[in-house]
Image (cartoon, rainbow, N blue to C red; front, side):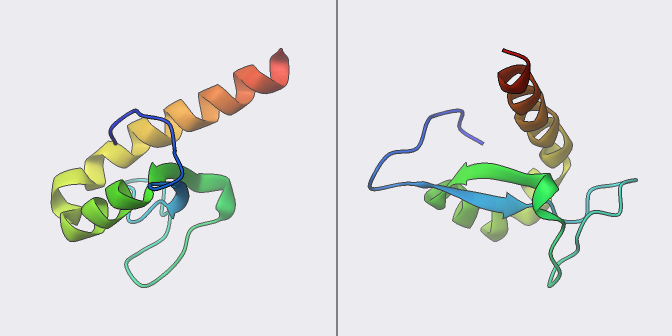
Length: 76
């Protein structure tokens, strides 16, 4: 959400995509596959769930960026 790296007092945690339109990934009260986990700071993860309607449509972008970083790392 914020683009920063994790640090000791605010570590990165796995956010499992919820209700991603067209992809049927997860749902409130359910859990998507770990393949579709997005790293968020612990504080950003809380913020996401507190304001789900504000951020839910950003998930596909975050997911694509996460998968792209992983793919590029594997190609190097």
